[in-house]
Length: 358
Image (cartoon, rainbow, N blue to C red):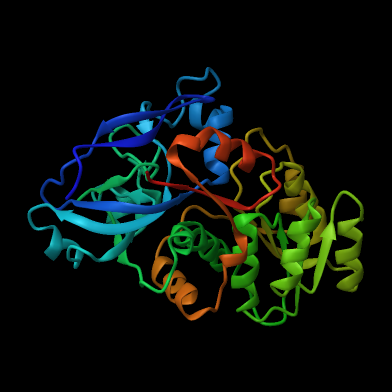
């Protein structure tokens, strides 16, 4: 029996997230109501909470976020109610475990018509818009246009919440176009960087190198197969990578640190004709010398956004153990302790904290 109201974490402004009682939505035509298992706190959630200009604009009001809205975009759950035609549209039944891709495409713009739905011009993403609420609640509504995938019961709620960030990592690695034998550098081995590292390992690189500032993350990177893990605050990472590559530099550099310094570092570290993948969401601008990109090295610069077409391989890899996120999971906090969970995440001392319904 679905309740009439639920507790939810609602976003009103920077550092203004409130735990409130709200109505449980009812599914309309083509829509699914799910009971949420767990929701991960993402780096973008932290940047939004801190007031990042991408989310709130330079004036704190005109950014991407449309408050009030229920936060959270890393989650999965079970179908508890079906709108008219939803079972046929999504291929699911009540009781099925499901995840929706982070973006709900309009299916009408130029990008959607060309199959590039992840760059939809309308760009509705769970957890940031008042009419597309996220998973930090007991129940969540998947719209008719949501891209829904089934989730195996073998995954824990925490592992299922990792499907979205792992899919994003999968896309970023795909954008790197890694070839067997390449020297690959992952800059920033937090939650998604450690996912990237595991996926990159599957591509049989010659050398896989992790960069970070936190020893515990570098230790995890080694345990996941990094050939070298460098603390950039204590060592000359650029020189080390050059020394390992006969002075050329790495073939592929994937920037996932969230720090603008990681961009300039990568431009110095990468070889001529190398591939640079930019993944991070920055709270401040990164200023670089574009001559390095053009005249000096003729680099391939690839952006990476969301996880298009990457949910099926991600779910399979998590289910068969090709990738492992169990060691990345930290603590699970009930919705009423959201503030505590956010502060713990902002400390940088843990990887993935979860919010669970109550």
